[in-house]
Structure formats: C-alpha cells, structure tokens
Amino acid sequence: MTPRYLVPFRPKNVSHRFADLLVIGSGLAGLRAVREAHPNQTALLVTKDKLLESNSNYAQGGIAGVLGPEDDFQHHFNDTMAAGGNLCNPEIVDMVIRDGPRRIEELIAWGTRFDHDAGTLALGREGGHSHQRIVHAHGDATGREVMRAMIEHIRQSTQTEIWERAFTLDLLTHDGRCRGAVITQGGSQPTMVWAKQTILCTGGAGQVFRESTNPPVATGDGYALAYRAGAELRDMEFIQFHPTVLYIAGSSRSLITEAIRGEGAYLVDCNGDRFMPDYDPRAELAPRDIVSQSIIRQMAVTSHNCVYLDLAHLDREVVLRRFPGIAKTCEEFGLDLATDRIPVRPGAHYMVGGVSVDRSGHTSLPGLWAAGEVTSSGLHGANRLASNSLLEGLVFGALAGQGAARAAAEMPDVMTALPIESSPTRHRGQSLDLADVRASLKSVMGRLVGVQRDAAGLKEAVSSIDSLLAYVLPQQFDHEQGWETQNLLQAAWMMATSALAREESRGVHFRTDFPVANDLNWRRHLAVQIETAGGYPRPGQPLPEQSVQDPVGSY
Image (tube, rainbow, N blue to C red):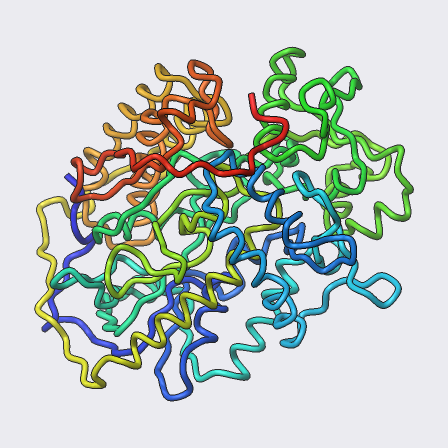
C-alpha cells in the first residue's frame, strides 16, 4: 500500500512557512514560472540540489523555434506532429510553436548569448526537423548558457526567495486541494510550507535506468509525490531514449547531441557500414524513436554492444568549433571527435509522459500547476521532437506561472496552518542496502523496460518492482537516499505497468510482441491516478482523427 506521506510530522512540532507561490524545481520551467509572480506576491523557489543542477543545465542541442526566413509555423507544426506518433494534441502543438519565438526573444532580452553567424542567429538542424530552426549557445552548451542568464535575471528582477538543497517530501492536500508541501533542508525537521498555489517543475526520472543522460538529481520525485497526492498522470510508458550516448567502460554516460547528426555525422556499425538508410529514408535525421530502435536492431545483427558516430568526412575545424564540449569529453578518453569513430548506444533521456496538465499548466488537483518534463502537456505525443523540451519549459513555465499568480491574487491574504499530520509507523528506516535496491531496479528497467519490450519481460519487471516496493515503500527514512529510492520505485512502477498495458508500438514505446501501431484500439492516453482503478493505468477516450501523420511511419 502506498503511504500518503513519506515522513511523520505534526503541525505543532514543526516550523511553518507561508507563501503566495511555491515553485518546486529550478530548471528552466521553474525559473520561467517564478518570473511571473506579481511584484507584491511572496514567491518561494525550492530545489533539492544547487540551483544549476537540473536537466535544463545539461541540454546540449538548443531550443527549437521558427526564426529562419525559409521556415514557418506550419513546418514546425508538421514536424512535431509527425514525430509524436499520432498522439499529439494539435491545439497544444500550435499554441507552443506560435509562442516559441517570443519566448526565445525574451531569453535574449534577459541576457542569453546565443551563437550567431554573420550577425544573425545561427540555426542548427536536428533529427525530425525539416528546416534549420535550433538556436544554440557555445556550440553545444545551450542549457548552461540559458540557465546562467535566467538565474541572473531572476535574482536581479524578482523578490523570489530561493531554498537550495531543500528536498520536497510530499505535497500537502486538504479538502481536495493542494495547500503547499512538506520540505526538509539538509535532512532537518520538515517544514510545512503553506502556499496559495504550487507549481511543480521537478524534471525527469532518468536515474530509473543505468544508462541515462540525466544528472543524479533526476529521480522521478515529482511523478511520485503527484501520484501520492492524488493528481492524474498519463503516458508514463513513453520514455525517450537518446540514440547517441557515449559508451565507454568506466565513463559517465555523456550525451552526444543530436546536432552532430544534424551537421552530417554518420552512424556506422562495428564493420564500418552506414546502416540508417536501410531502416529509414531520413537516415540519421529520422526522429529519435526510429534511430534508437534501428541502433538496437543493428547491434543485434552484428552481435556488438554499440555502434559508432563517424565525422571523419566533415571539416575538422568546423566540427571542433561547433562541438567543443563534446570534443573535450572525447579527448579525455583518447578519442578525437573529428577523426575517430565514437562509440555510442541509446540511453534513457527524457520522460515524455508525466502529470496531466491543461493548456494553462493546471493539473487535475486544484491548487497545483506543473510545467516542463514532469508533465504530459500534449505537445510531444508518443515521442518528443528534438529541442522541443526547452521550448515546452519556456512556454508552459510562463503559462503556469501566470495562471498560478492570478489564482493566488484572487485568494484571501490571510493564511493559516491546517490540521494535516502524518503518524509514525513501526517501519522506521530498517537497515536496507539502498544502493543494492537501486542497482536491482536499474537492471530490471534496463533489461525489460528499455527500447524494446514484450509482455513476458514487462510482467517480470512489474513483479520485481512490486517485490521491492513491498518492503521499501512502508519505511519511514530520515535521509534523502531513502526518499529518492522510494520515489524511483514508484515512478518505475508507473512506467512498467503502463508499458504492459499498452499492447501496441507507438513512438518511443516499442513492443516486439505488438510491433505496429493500433490506432483503432490504442490511439488514446493511459491515465494513472492513485484513487482510480487501484492506481493501475486506465485507457482514456479515443482521440479525434488528425490530418497530419508521420509520412514514413514507425516500425
């Protein structure tokens, strides 16, 4: 049984904090959301690590936006819809794409220094895009530059209070509304933070897998605490695997940006054969789901544990100037990016599913808003188009911030603590080898809930996760490692049960036992909510027909 709150607390025994807006998470979506607080409102931004430590900071490729003379909104719309496996919400896609250029211009006005070419913004191209429309910074360090500028802007232009190294344990709910959150700083006694409106921007869950591009903080906290609070989540089976993750024994699994293939790099197998044209006419510039599946198939054909990026046919100076960060990473392992074949394989990269939000960023739980990777907004469908993630964070961060600020302004100024408490249990952090639990979970997810899946493997995965949950979830820990492990298990359970329920292949969800898309029965979302259907995934209504579909199709 899933506990409502991870730790015990009583209002009389803990400290209290009151705020108009509480923003949980300091990635681009969270920073953009808190920017919308009214001047007379108190805003609190909390992050469990340092302010810079988020998936946004590690984004290499850039931000997609219609900015070039040959491009237009219809092209970007079509590309997004085609990549999304016929599951995108066209109204959301249109809204985000049309708002994108304005949001990028805001970043420039607030001090972001994007790369330029001959005095104009340099625009790159990535997989699934029909035109050059990716703005980038320092070659392959877009996220770091955007976050630098946004953090400086927030600190200079708002009265936002920032709590670093503050772990959000759970959302506070009372009478069917979100009332704030229970937060601990440095493992101290929890603080009950009461907020008129709360915005969830906690990012992804890549640490569920051993092979992941995500930083250590991406432990699925937002999905788990939203689930425990009763909010609806959906599409949790859709986990995007980035096709090209550096694969060297002993190294961290460093992302190698899709922009490298956009500049003309080839994918070759261990025999030096370029294989992508055999799988898709778009070759290396096919959407990520197709490239990842093709790599897995080619690895099986060659019985080799990786494939290779080959840039030897490109201009050396251009390569090193365009991708200095990746070149430096490769150099650390004795590889020359411009001439050597770079070993790569897919790794968990982005959660396409998440907390259900409407076009304003409001969740199913009154008082709770969400933006960024933690959400399922309808933009990505079953597969995210490259560089649409930071775009979504910008647009929905602004929308959620605006909506929450308006809602808070309409509420009475007087705030009081409510009689919410969590009782101690007999399971008081029993001695568990949490590192072993995590290793077991990562192994199960990588083997059975990876790029390719089938019913037998998914049933085994669900059974294994159930066993881990049975003795880890009832524990009441007093440290971050324990809470993160509980959240990882809860997020993994939602992913695996949803993947088992969807008996078809669509986007990033590929079932070898159901290898084609089944629009008649499965062109619908799968929702997960703790108070409905025992918390198990349930199919929604079939979606209306769309006029734009993938012109090539998936497997």
